[in-house]
Image (tube, rainbow, N blue to C red; front, side, top):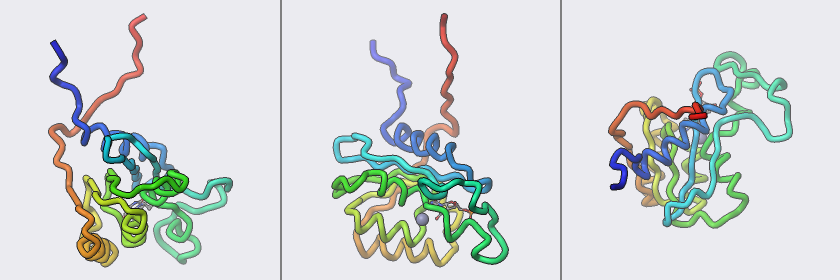
Length: 163
Ligand SMILES: Nc1nc(=O)n([C@H]2C[C@H](O)[C@@H](COP(=O)(O)O)O2)cc1CO
Ligand SMILES: [Zn+2]
């Protein structure tokens, strides 16, 4: 008889986003994104971090202070990294799973890339103009935004072996 406690597609893809976000070195917010095609194949993955080929040590993780001394001008968002990691593959009709609602900059890129669905978990910046602009653009561009309501709060993975 087949197992009944297997994880759903949504839990699987959001789980992969969360696991990817665990690679992030951002001390305050870790974000992961997973792009999936219409056949439930993973096309690309990303998380928020500094620039390829540059030492992380050269950039600040500060949230406050002079703009140039904060992370904000330098950090590449998870969604943006996922889109760019696809290396130009056609993303038309794909979905993106991201554990935090996309900012306005990522929203523009998501729309322009052809992604048609955004699955998200957290909306902690919902009162910001950036998120309001994202929602306005997604609505105009007919990109569907779906807040996932997971069945469980936690999924555990184990590296334990049986030998
Ligand atoms: N959707 C998102 N994807 C992301 O990758 N990020 C990243 C950018 C920063 O590294 C961090 C937000 O930092 P903070 O302002 O919560 O300390 O998360 C942020 C958002 C929120 O719009
Ligand atoms: Zn963003």
